[in-house]
Length: 574
Image 1 (cartoon, one colour):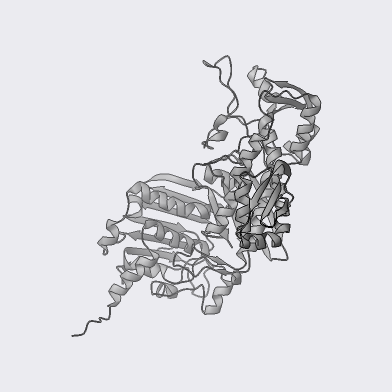
Image 2: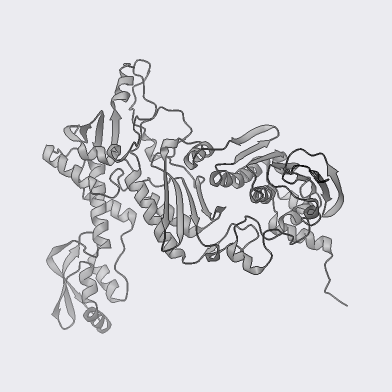
């Protein structure tokens, strides 16, 4: 008896649909990308029942001709490519030709479209056409009333004929969050377009064309414009261009929900790129919180493979290590040299306050809501002469408070330094530089450590003299079977275990960020240590030599700024 069956086209369509369409957010993504490929400048998305009942998308793009309407719901019908070689020069969002076919297989679709308006002449009229597809079957193709170029598509009763798929959809809140996660990246990478998203008549997003990337980022992410940095750099030799919008220290999120990576304007997922960008942010943020970034990498499409999965979110990059190196260098420079100090929250008006509280926002150590309408500290970047680093360079020491805070004045501001946090940063970067330069500072042992070696360890010791010295460990031969360890790196403990591990073929111990931060903390001056003017000035100069002078290794600010305007408000002088 035959056991092998040839599946019917209806079953094949439903199985294939599951690869590209698994929830309302998948449908929104595919249709949104089609609108972008059609050069739409306005895209509206209207939902009912989180898209399960209706997904209605309207755009003002180039539209679809009657001839193409006949084809677009067939499998592998696409206007984006015609040969396999086209994948190496791909500039469109879609290219597989599966989206509309898959969507139509599991829903009721009514699509109306009109191509770009052409002045009527010689009998040519501007026509609009409407096509109706249900469960993959075409029910009609008819003329429609002309209403301007673009496409209007309604996806109703999603998964009506695949109840198992519909059963696994989440509640409306979860499905709406998924849709927002799909839409948001496109609003960021196309600030010149208008995006509208509504649910059951309630507006969730209404982003009008923005004048800049930062303007759109602030509007879309509910943050302040002055909390973002922008950079645009071309690496000619690598044929790569990187555009960045980076949140500074004032944007701290409990999750990675404000982090976006694009390759050639396409939102992508890359664990390696994301990990390395977050690793740089650890230099300025405390543990447990995450920064915000929008990074768009433009490179030769031939060096990107987007044809890994039907969602097209996963990519492979040629020479990914080099790209990561460029990103890290560029991100670190922006955060270290262009970033601001941690800012005050809304100042307390003492005459109205029932309880006296510090004006400093201690939420630097925990996530905060960046949508607050608190008044900012009066500090802006007007040029290099007004950066915080420049101000601190010109600042004059005026005294200390509680032997904990050092106070400087410059222009119309007071700069207040946490002397322990500042010293932590200085020592942290000193230790880090030593490790990177392989010039680890060591101290002589009062009594040499004698280690009896096995024959294998003796051979290894004879070969590893240079490696040991580089690690800051000086050794000499004591007798035929014993060596004497004469010095110990200041950054290392348990020198016996370290030497034996090296002789057994291990690597010199690596000090990670947390370990260096702990060591820097222990080596730093503390609150209560009195610094005179010369010592305070020496610390200031050392801090200015640091790559990131304005946060300690644990993410706390080393310096805050209080302006004359802030004080005037406190004393009701304005």
